[in-house]
Image 1 (tube, rainbow, N blue to C red):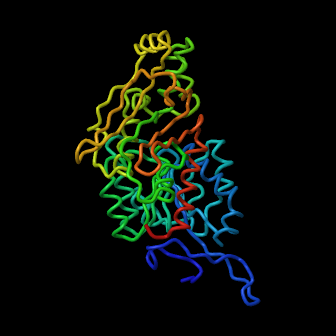
Image 2: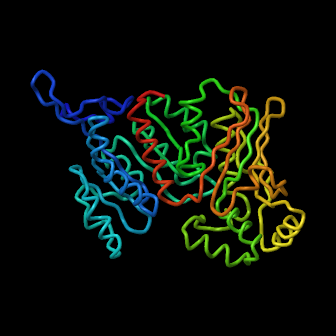
Image 3: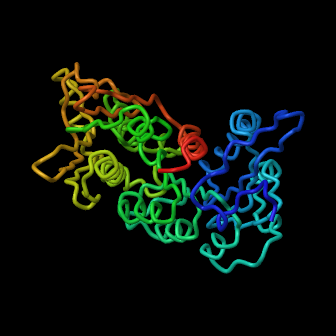
Length: 374
């Protein structure tokens, strides 16, 4: 086995250590190789591939690291594996012409996604499949990867919200990382901020606007737009879930709030345990009434401690104009943390798109490289 490569069976507990191309005692030391696999290759997955290509030289300089994508699996466009590395640029160009992945496959035959995970030879799996409230089948895929000693980075809220403790426990047992920055507020640093910059901080409560679709609809209705037209624009921008009812009925915000409660506040509140009320065409009357009172209607997610429990709720709230949440318009998001160290701390994300979500994957990848151990 090539000693310059790190395999999941030889050393599952860490991403390759630094070994950059530089002269050491008159010798040039080659870069270390890491194998990546993408489960899902939609807008976010393809945007992430573009980021990897753009940051290739930076990764080599910063970490002495070369990467290759040894597998891509999709629901509708087939799958491809290549131990020498898939031609990512060629695949991205071909995607526009509608060609499927199978033509690039040169690995063993795969009859299922779990076969793909076992055979793709990845050190890190990036999971970006569609949100399902049950967390399946993504939870099964993530569990399979972690159990095989593969690091997992995901933007999928479903498995993190519904199986957070089981998956994080499995990752610890197998000595790998399970990272999920992109599940809440796209690429804005929420979990990395707490992990790296606020050590030992206790969050007393939090609140925020966590769903771009509903926020865009509400702020457009303030200006006289119809509910349907605002929803159509959000769909055209690619920011809604595949099923927009997950946004409109508050499920997306509830899943994100559940993750925040479990990952940041030590609670165990699952999405179905969160009190939830969404928005509809009938919300226009409430929007206009709030504007007449010089207030604003927003779909607010809240979490607070009640004894040993952490309570969560998602519902429309009429806010005073001076409230920072009232100022959040369009596709923008905000999260306000009430802490014992920094008092009140706000994170604002202005009109995010798929590129920001894709950057969360890259940010978590860099976290793996900088901090091999959890």
